[in-house]
Amino acid sequence: MLESKTGEFLFSIVGDGDAIETKTQIAMLPARNQEEFQRFALAANDVATGDAKLSLRGETLELSRQESVRHLEPEAATRALKEFGATAAKLKAILRQSFQAREPLPFGLDRVK
Image (tube, rainbow, N blue to C red; front, side, top):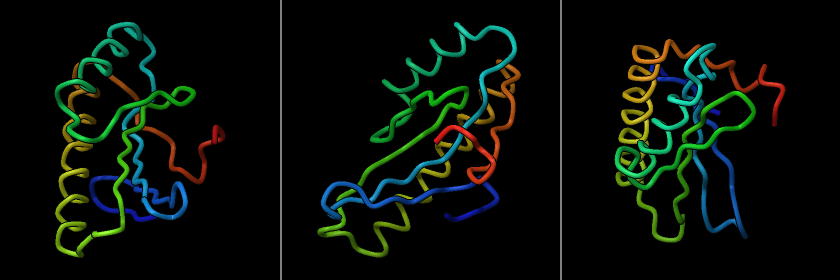
C-alpha cells in the first residue's frame, strides 16, 4: 500500500503474476441522490477513466487499473501512476462537490474486502 497526498493506493499481483492491479477508493455512496451518483459513475467509466475502471464495492466507489509487468519500464510505470492518481483526484473532487459524497474509509479500516 502507498499513501500520497491524492489518496491511498493498494497494489496487488493478479493472474499468474504477469500483471499488477492498482486500486484506490474514490468516495462512499452519498446519503442522497445515490441513483444519480451511480449513473455518473457509469458514464465516467465510459469517458473519463481511460484504461481504469470504476466499480462499487459495498458502499465504496473504487477506481482500479491493471497493467502487464512483462515490459513495464520504471518511467512508464511512474507516469501511469501519476495519471491514475490525477484521475482519482479529479473524480473525488467532482463527486464531493456534485453529490456530497463522503470520504472513503482507509483500506485498513474498510470492513468489506
